[in-house]
Length: 136
Image (cartoon, rainbow, N blue to C red; front, side):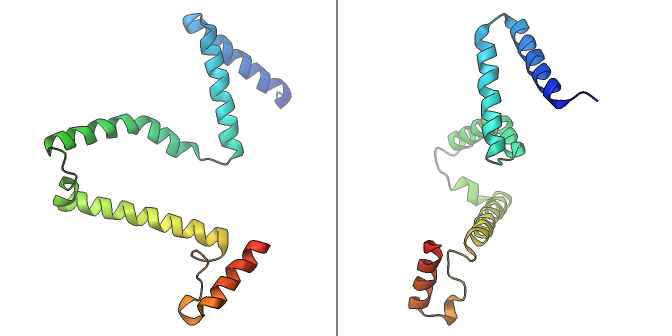
């Protein structure tokens, strides 16, 4: 088994050689280094690569078809709510986004925006609970 401290620099050198050999451009090697650095930063920030890759691939196609739909409807965005299938898809997407935001908020702060037990607690108790949480 090859040790990691030897394997990693070898992979970097072979990547740089491959990028340089495609067009004999030093700019491409710098571009490789930039994207390597961005990948390192995203890995440290624990960003998932799959959604970014999907956005990179599907983003231009979505933009083109959105522009095409807006031209066909003469700029009326209500065309997306006029058909049942598109309305259902938009509602499901909005619900998934809201559910993800609520889940992240609950994990970060212990409740949905600090309002746990809201109907049974007074406003003073909720404000004091949030104030105590911020002091920690």
